[in-house]
Length: 149
Ligand SMILES: [Zn+2]
Ligand SMILES: [Zn+2]
Image (cartoon, rainbow, N blue to C red; front, side, top):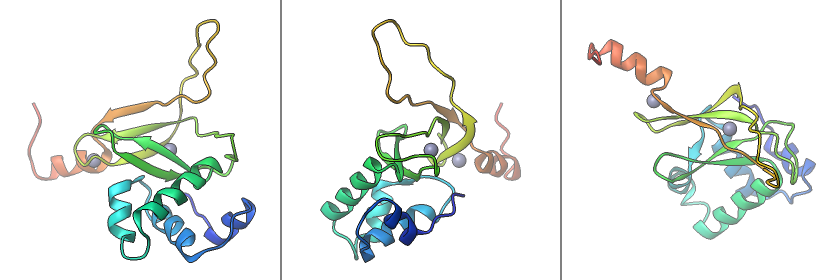
């Protein structure tokens, strides 16, 4: 889990400290897995309206505080970036894992393979997502005794 200090993070990035901005960071940093936009809306809906939330998420992405990962259903998920990320310069070259059972997205400490682009193509970001069954779901499967053949 990426330990963050919302107040310090806002200051470092020259962002004004607001209660709402802190709340968004707190919610996203709460779990080791990425949080989906609908889930964020559900959790923060009483405190932050959709438009404001959307705006905050965009600012955070621009600043390299968050990265967005699309899941298997095309839903946006957000995770805190590593400290190496900064404005216009994301270093999140890690592999994501999207569990097809619980649909959670994990940021793995696995470096994404470097893709060699054809001549004339300049890749700015690449996205590597592995799909399958996560550790937790695999364990539940074993415990309930339902062996997959
Ligand atoms: Zn799972
Ligand atoms: Zn990630």
